Image (cartoon, rainbow, N blue to C red; front, top):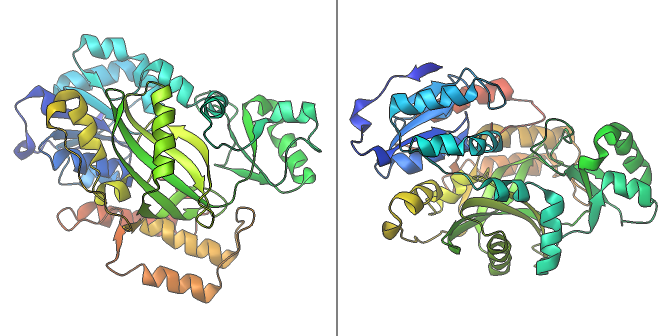
Length: 414
């Protein structure tokens, strides 16, 4: 392993329980995990993907490291255990599903080392990432969900009349070695387009979920379940995405829709969920109708918006294990808007290029798109990286933005 930021001894905590190894990657989501924990007095050691990881440049990280092994490689377990012993941490908090998946398999080893892992149980993780299972659970709970089936079943049943177009195609199970849809969402507006996708996905058609497309915006609910009950939620609408046809939310606005929250809690209670989750819906603001899309067993990509709006999800998650008696709910600000500068810049370029959009949506006029970007340069829109007390990560993000300018995709969770 490589240490890319020396240990800042001014952040040292003497209680082992207050030392956290945060496996956060390079982007804004991980940065706000580090900020949330450290601003509440924890000693946070960050694991990034590269030396340009934003958390490696944050004043809130006590040190930063790059691992030599990826989660699927044979040396990963030993490397993690070595780092845990070297830093003498009391817990590990991962961000991405790949790390969650591997670390869950290490839970017995971590328990033996008296290190708490902030990940769901193996059973809950596998259920939450199985869209078939969750889809059926929603039907049983009478939670609105799009009609759909696996691509291979659809082709066998007869693609001509089984589902109503347009259709959206997504990966059914993320945590498999092969057979993932190469985009977040693919669309079929006609039978011909569906057959074209089937030709591309035929070898793993059993891992492709096809559903009827529901209009509206993506609504994400970041939720912390504690002792079988909801502790707190923070939800937001994705206003802009990159790629335009379906990708990460590069501009968001905090919101609150009680019916969506109620169904989120109902679903997670049925799973006996403990800890953090990000639950995604499609919400139509014109009608108030919504459908469930998926559960992410991790922090949402819009975590910066959630924390800035008042829900300290990472710190509350830490508290839920180490000091639950001190957990306190805080006000959640509605209407707080934040953006990823690089992602928003590429959203604008996508509008200029007239990149593909989801069904039923239309491009903004070029002048209107430019005004939208300029308007959101005002102080009423927060930046996902910039913080006056912690400016260096924004400088790193700005340099990376210049390198990625013009890209047709934008990664937020590494």
